[in-house]
Image (cartoon, rainbow, N blue to C red; front, top):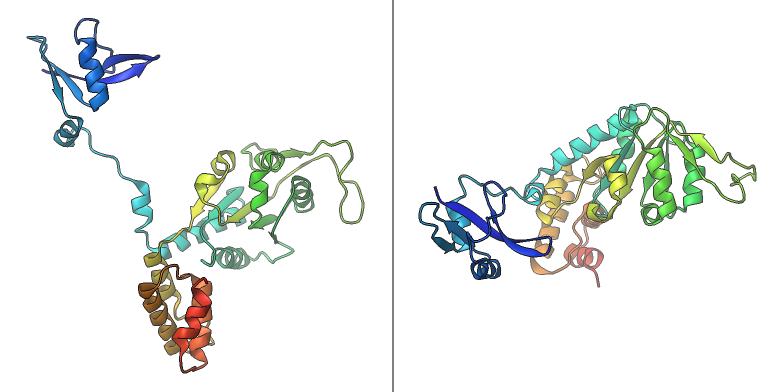
Length: 316
């Protein structure tokens, strides 16, 4: 049986490594010049064990002829881009319920703006009987490490929704606070050590450490690849990123229930116009927010709704 080798660098030295076993070819089996040429051309070296003859095979040919024994792995992003939006949002609802019921301490929701992430999360929490400002709290905007510590302290038994508070992911102190809050230990104790004690809005000093029993749902427009790995590893992750095809599918799925006061005919007209504009212009803003604008314009019965919608959903 012919032995196959690839040219690789090991500890800075160029060697021939057996593809099947990972062992390095004995000295003298393959000449150095053959290894160098194979490395340069990304070729595979075949050694006949009976004759010792070394043959160089093109890497592309080897990969094509060995697909049965070494099948190429799937690219998960290709799967993501074909997902049914309804399934994506159904899964987001399930994850949110698990956090709301205390099964999971945190959820990280990512995806572009105007997809309905915040609406679904809040609607799901309310379906569990949690009322805003009582069972869960919703914060939106910039947050410092100190502000985050105070927020977690004041809501240490609640579900906390941090919506577009992306500054916490860029602050090392804030990330460390979140790691402590989301740990899998039975007791999650958060500390903030400073020369002066933090004070609440009434000027009352708060403890330097406390036990956090709450849950956190992050909602962000930042791509997951740019988020802290420690936060992702401690959380359920729901990526609601959608391409244009998926976004149009999502709008169709919500056509009857979204904006119920607008006649269905007007919403269908708005969808048709958005599809036309997408086919004619670059950079058309396709999301639920832009659809709502378009539907409201169509509902008013203007003579030239297409032009008016274009002004609203095509960036200048």
